[in-house]
Length: 146
Figure 1: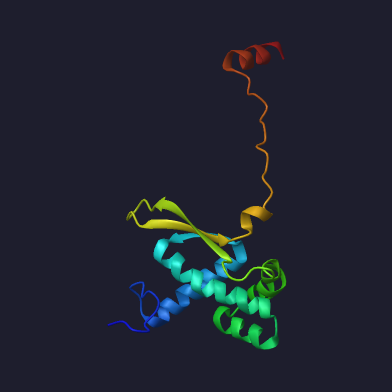
Figure 2: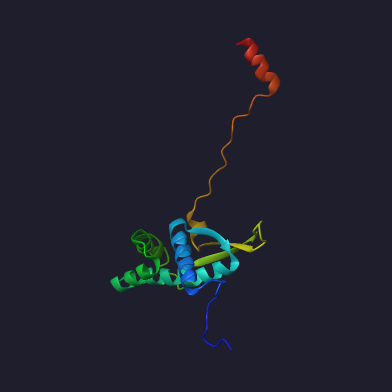
């Protein structure tokens, strides 16, 4: 029976699993949107939501706890100064997992993990229109004339 045994092992040793989750959290804090497998995304959600909760607390002890996991001063600073204040009014649900498809090499199911307010914050960019390219016969006539 698996009473009180939470989390996925992800077919890794405990040290490798810890390093993997650290790297995933760092990438999420840095880029605010990452693509990974479903199982890793579901495990990442647990760690990332805890980090945002620590960021919302904002005290020195919370900073030290966040640094113990992430081990990056820049990431902790960004988490506490930029990311956590955006979720001040929200109680949980800071991340979103969107199914993305399957990886080409081994058909592993992929997901996109992003902070919940990511799509609301990003402004949609208009597609830039390119100038129409002259066709072959137009290029030849222009070259002959010039």
